[in-house]
Image (cartoon, rainbow, N blue to C red; front, side, top):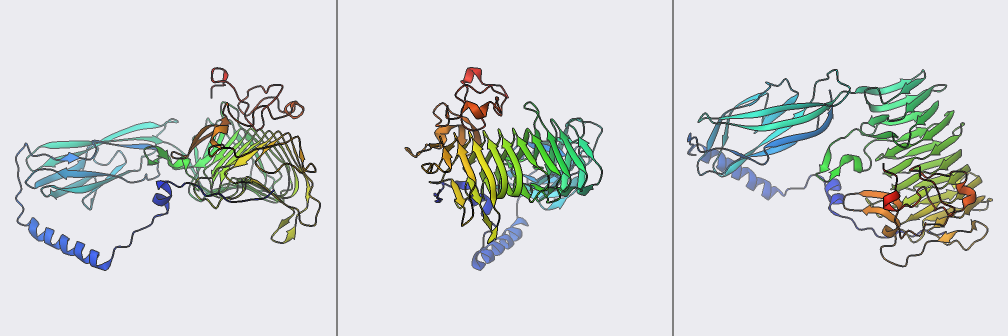
Length: 499
């Protein structure tokens, strides 16, 4: 069980995210300032027209915002206002049709307000208009469509408009909230947006019913010192995600990026965690568990696309079944000491943002030179794969290493019969072998569907002895006599369960 990093192909998005303010040389800056001064002096001699046929053009005639939580200011959208004519145009007034009551706000050529006066656009030139929204709360449980318009009145009397559209969703905001009494959250309530933290105190239970979504602001996290019960269903999972509902690009929602919020921390005092059909994605980490006194039971859950660890278990007692843990910067699963059993899990390390990614699976008797004895860790009918030459790493040292793999497909050397029992070693017989295992593997739009492809090496590699404990897969499909390894059972398209 060795680990080797493999170079990953990065596309333009890494540069977009990591590129900060670009340094402008002093000479260039002086040149720009001189140009601006010359333009300003020339504007006094600019010839303007009031001909009604001379009009503005816009980079877009409608600005549409994705769903916005009421009471929370949106991101800023921008539009270019062009004058393509041979003479300058004077805009007598730019105003919001609603006079500012809709929640939209504008800035035109540096001027703020629901109404802006006297804007000049020189010939063959343009100015910026910036728009953002803070939609007032209302009484609706469902998103409410908001429409406004920006009216441009030229000196000639001609009026032009740009349409503004948004969808406002009422919400409940929690800021550094401490729950000291039991709380149940259901989908019948307004969605919760968490700032800073949501902490479940000792001897307190937070229960999330099916269909519930918790939205977390950047850096916000869920800390459980009491108990956490997530009761999702196949049709209505419980979702924990970031609160950005907009897009970085037309094809790329922020919800598909990592590090949009914190994650879940199960503290040492945690009295237990029961999690069924949860969708935990795009955080800084997935679930961190350290010395929790209660048992951890995770089934039919997805932990995907996080900037740290997916599932981190230190001296815990955990049962994980029918669960997908995928695309994490650090290890998808890290286990330091304790007890853990994994049944029919897909652990896939295809983190796309950095080639210095962790392992799919890391198991160790040591952490920071301290001993944490692996008492018993077992994997049954699992599929563990990734980009590296070896995705399973064990650090036993001089201590007993009570780790076993049964009827699993693993990207590692499985020849040691002390640890590997009827396991299949995944081989790299082609440059695209990882992609052929799965239904969707789109590294451009960061879309991954880890359901099995017809060519997947995991098909039929499990054992009915262990699938009898979990006879249906994560999608609720019945496993066959020769079950597939991992959390998904392959189905032909015509028989696949509709989600």
